[in-house]
Length: 152
Length: 81
Image (tube, rainbow over all chains, first blue to last red; front, side, top):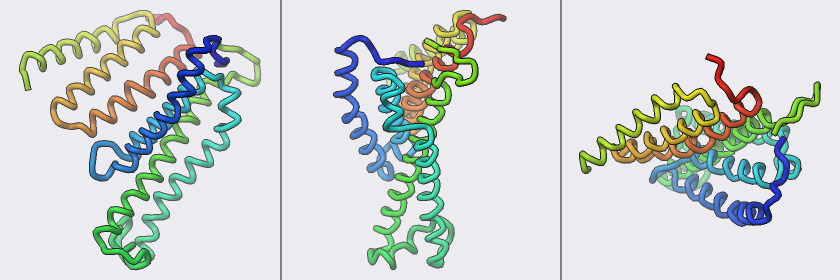
């Protein structure tokens, strides 16, 4: 069980750093299709922000914002976005994940539709990876309910 | 790039890899494994595989170390063998 840090400097600095970590992760996700980075790395950095909050603010306080149930819902949502965009291309007459066919309903050119489609898939991957990383972290660090063993 | 720098990186990589599997204290082994991932990340970046280096830095050196520390804290700190 991780409790809140006693040091006010650690708590405050972690709270101040959290928005910048999230902003950097969003930058990595948004620029993933033409520079290093992408959905996977951005999702991991998003999860790292949550883990920093857990380590400094205590697991109970963070679980009010991001519980294990919410994490599982978010991971399913990420998978749904990924598979949904792929299936949408299939419905519109192309292959699976053939983003060019998205141009007609979005009323943009094929090249721009491909860019937007990859961006949508990256967002889905980032959501899924972030939620799964948080779920694994919570599963490891939540104490057992049965025998009431307390760690750390 | 500079061959000497490359050689030093590979040397550190070997030292970290051998240390990570020989150290008896598992918490120290996890931290040495994090250092190994970081040297691997520098080598990937040096081989101009920036995307792989990014993944190595964020996943292996970032989240992986945290999850291994969690696993050590849930089990035992000393290795039996």
